[in-house]
Length: 154
Length: 281
Image 1 (cartoon, rainbow over the protein chains, first blue to last red):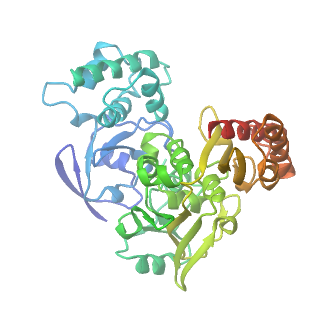
Image 2: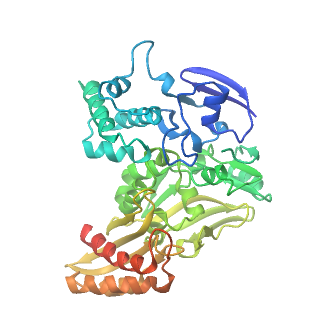
């Protein structure tokens, strides 16, 4: 089936099998391998991307469902050499250990901050309900989100 | 992992969707947040998927007189954030705000949730407590199914092949106080037990009450014994204690034992959650 999906501002037209998951479209058809596959069953959040501005899990969405929509992946967050404030905060606060969950963490938390610009620490932890860090590096992830909120709000 | 192959359809109308869905092996795809994980694990291998996700006629939340009408394609996030739902069925907003996680709530729909009828899911408990009506469209026309008749068993509802949920109609609960309280599984956040209470009091006396329990049994269940224990009471400690014992009996030997919790624990927790729910009103 032919689909037209805009990813990081660029329109891609591809002929794909209906069973292709959005995450596989992003990784295999487009070669954007920043989005990771963890659990395949919408629990771990490693595959989180934005679709029409909202965080979704791209392992639990067929690419055909994204036809005609706008998708943003981790590769679309920086503007040239300037990192997104959330990326910068993750760097600054060392909000990662192995880094596998980081793209999903950044996509989930940037979407969250759009609706909740000034979250408490408890709210940040609650917002990360669907993103697992198996290194258990949550402390610095939460600190990074807090820092990003302050930067954006400042 | 990769789902098995299927034929994909994107109908332009509900009528067309119903026609496609009446074919053997066809499944409706909305948010897909129950279906796609099952397909990824190959527990489900539907031969045809009918993508109803673009049928805008199934969207929207509105109030019609004293009824709240929720389109089947409303997402959990939309329901949780809706001022109409917060006013007319506050516990449904609470329940939907605890489904999955933010990304799941952005894409998963109430229609899909009810059709899937996971016994550990939150919305069915509230829908049952409110005496909601599930509206459907099938090849033989429309049906209005009472929530009490809609949920049949584990993952089983009264939907015929080709029949699609179009909306959920909830009698306004705005004159009542409502609460939904759950004991979430620590990892999945599914309800090990969930209790919904909708209550009206007059001069401190409980004169209208509905209680439903989910997670504890194969399908959400009305706790009629616990309702009787509280009806006419002043919600004093003794009445609450009696209701807690009654709700355990209401579930009785229908309580489920699984790897998360045994039946005795679930019966006990239903009583605890009922007391918490009443205190939260």
